[in-house]
Length: 157
Image (cartoon, rainbow, N blue to C red; front, side, top):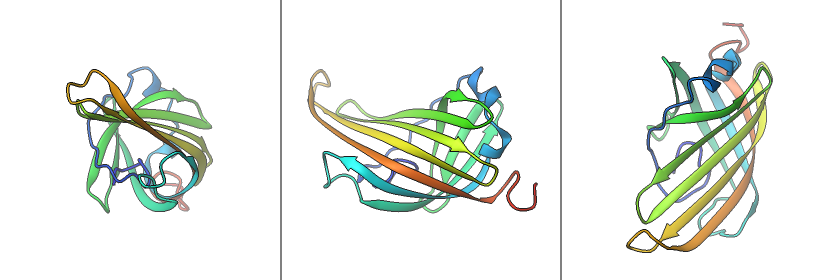
């Protein structure tokens, strides 16, 4: 399972750099360790996507790269922040190879020690030459995250 590709029976971990401009607007409360629950809202592939999951996210920043790690699965990926302000963060990633790609977009509404959001996932399967899409599978998950540790988690540190 991927770090924030909830319930996807498809392993993925590829590094993308966060946009230099957007990452500067990410609220400090975004960083830290989170317990994240995901519930399937809709899908066209119940074989690929699970109904619900619980994960851990450890979100950190070094220079201009924001990394999301799952300590349970040891998966790690850098994310591309496409929108950020004091109350919302949207990030994306694309992983895979020539024959299968996973497109992942997460939209979060932040509070001090929690967030609500959605995770949109698209998995595209390509022909062996990588030129033609032969299958597209999608899912939408509702997300709820609770801060476990890090900035402003209970102690304010």
